Length: 215
Figure 1 (cartoon, rainbow, N blue to C red):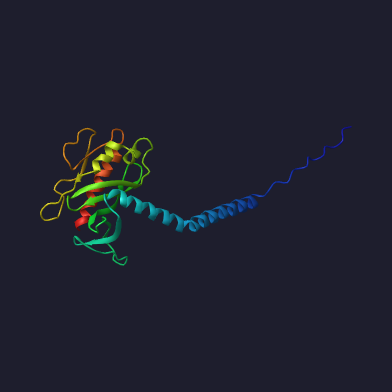
Figure 2: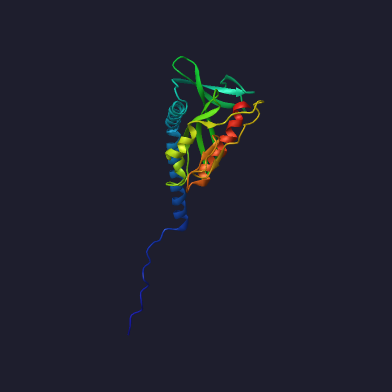
């Protein structure tokens, strides 16, 4: 006669409540670590960003030995005051002799992937863009990021015409990006084949931003 079967012992399994608590606790710990690291490095990141900006300013304004932040109010330069809101901040460059060598202006606008932030150098005497530097971009590697590297594209910003009408109300000619090889005028930007949207975005950003110089 067969002996009665014995119940198979069951292994203890963690309760769902305990698992959920552990997962929540781990998530909170990770979030706390991320915030702590971010906050702990904020000063360092701000310093590096300011350092990179200063270096770029000297790059985009030729023959500049020192610079000073200022504001534009009704087309006139005034000393920088952080309390004044709604005015355009620029960086004024000076040469060895203490004479103004040009302005540097931060600009931004929508690119293909995200917002593109650039710095342009402006010569008020010739009313031309004389320098260009990409401060921040998430454009497609190998295509859109050519706005930072393509020598032919960067050559557009040696003397880009941004001259004003007699009333100083608007540009004589809007800055536009044309197809690669079709540039015929000094206010046009010779675009990049394969990076049409990104290069067109630069033309629009500059055109829109130059309006602030005489606001």
